Structure formats: structure tokens, C-alpha cells
Length: 127
Image (cartoon, rainbow, N blue to C red; front, side):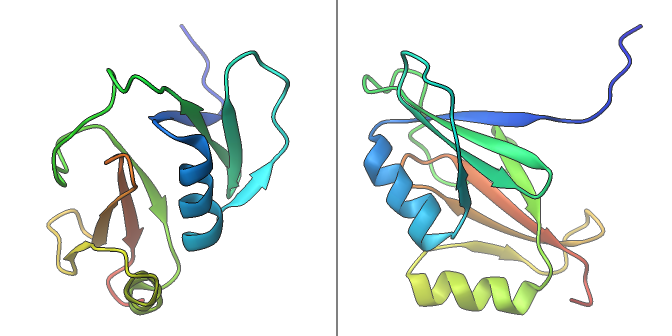
């Protein structure tokens, strides 16, 4: 049996690494961390105790083209405040789909990055 310790990272494909860097670094304010000198182009971010890896995939064959679909592949980040997250997204001009009373047992906010990767922000109902 595999003995799991923790999730290390999630990798997603992007079409233009510098455009993605501006979104994740400047709009979402993710903390960029050092990346080994792989032959591929990429950026790594610290997200709590985990990592998000962006990998440039210029031909875009593996990238989705649709709108928010929570059944599609995505990653989720637990945030401290529903209200503050909504305010930040609105200030940054990022469209979102809010589910303040989700049947999941916590509030959910969905956004798309510039390559239509789905990001979910989760928060306790009373936050």
C-alpha cells in the first residue's frame, strides 16, 4: 500500500508564461518560489504548504476552452474570508461565480485564469 504524507503540488498548463505570471503574481498575489532549471518553461508558487506549478504549453492542446464548470479539473484553495476574497476579485476586475451557500458545507468562489484553468476558493460559511 502507498503511504501518503501530503499533496506536494498541482501543475497546470498555460499558453503564455509571462502573461500567466502577471495574473498569478500581480492579480492573485501568489508567492513565486525558485524553480529548478528544467528545459521546459515554468513558474512555481507557494500556496500555503503546497505548490502550484505553471508550465508553458504554447500549442494549447491540453488546455480547456469552456467557461466555469466545477465538474471539470480544477484546484481549490481555502481562504480566510469570503467577503475579502470577493472584494479583491472585484477590485482586480476578475469575473467570478459565487456559491455562498453551497451544498458542499462551505462557501465556494470560482474563477478562471487567463488560460481558462479553473480556480476554486473555499471558505467557512461564517467567514
